[in-house]
Length: 174
Image (cartoon, rainbow, N blue to C red):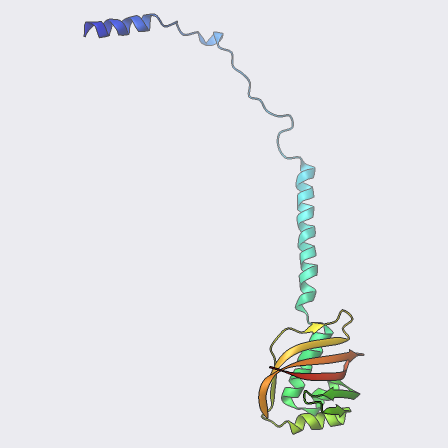
């Protein structure tokens, strides 16, 4: 046991004495010049963020409003669903042509209204898909369901000129 104590004393005696605080040099903290974010960068990021927000709004808002072909398609489906003459006169040109899936051709606004009335009050028509339109807005198409004097699914194609439907084609889908 004495040997252990002697060894401990000898090891502590052989250590070099601690240096005084004046002998220790402190290294200054290394800081980059102009630390912090430059103001112009903050302003640039804020301007870009605002620009992207405006661009997003300008892109999304027009898509929320239906285009003329979409509006006319929805109103045409509603007109055939209701069978009301006033609905047809607001949508179809006086010399409009409707071609049914069976090939029957109906010409003129008066004949189209009579054809819709002949379908009967039990006839219903509902658009089931999105409206596709050409870039010019001259043609529009949509899938619809109907029931009444039969039941099925069809494709409705409209030709649009001057804000009115000039021709309409219906095709039965399997």
